[in-house]
Length: 322
Image 1 (cartoon, rainbow, N blue to C red):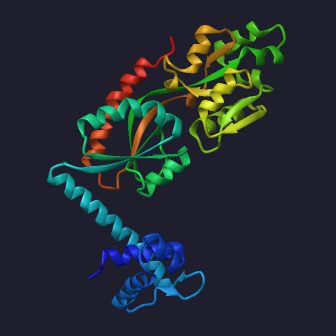
Image 2 (tube, rainbow, N blue to C red; image 1 turned 30 degrees about the horizontal axis):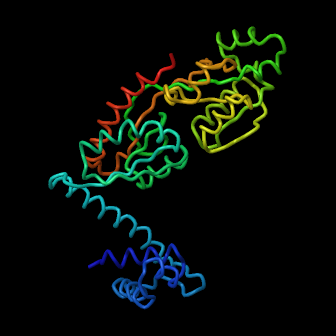
Image 3 (tube, rainbow, N blue to C red; image 1 turned 45 degrees about the horizontal axis):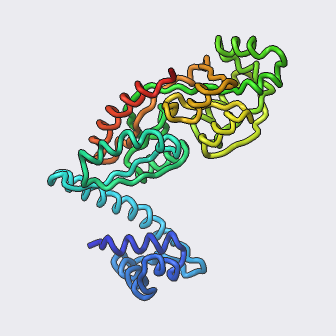
């Protein structure tokens, strides 16, 4: 009979390519780890490792590593499902989300969810769109919140609320590009947000791999322009703050624009910042929740989706620029 612990220890040794490093990571002796691996080799009558430095897997070892991950995943799925069936008295939920979006919308969701389900252990994985899609596909998160479509095989999505990406352009930049014509250019941007007018305007963008960055690149390509990119960063709030100081134009999600934001104070208390709606289909989208339909959906996940839909739809209605 297969011992789960043997499989777990074998996988760590395979990932570390070293008995010494694996034993240290597992906080057990090298002799104990070697014994677990020897038990597997005896059970299947095979050799799992080439005794090289670093350790490498034999063909049989590679096959066992692949199936061990599947077996352990199925074990975890079974335990979660049985715990749910029992009484939903405890559980675990791992949420994937971008750094900035998490800071904005999770405070609207998690306090309500926590109050209703205090025994659910919550975990958060933050990253860009590309990273989150991969983690969802590999079962490292139970669900992700992102703009639709969410890419990946066997991914089911639940639409939550509308989202729009807006263009922010400081007047000081327009004055440099179009001396004496700022009001004229602003009127044109307000009418159609024609990006060809900003072909020579410096832009501040978040790093490649984020949905907003992908949208910016697509709009630049459609407009056949290559504006200078003066700064790239992972933090969209840094981009926003620098744009409000006149360093460059940028793109920013409408949902993030709450009454307490720096941008809102800048727009209501000081002149010199233009906020424009983009005439591009992908600037108008849907925020949604994605989950892997091939994995067991726990009640914790189901209830999170329900609460998230309720709270985010409410938040979306309230967080509109006045």
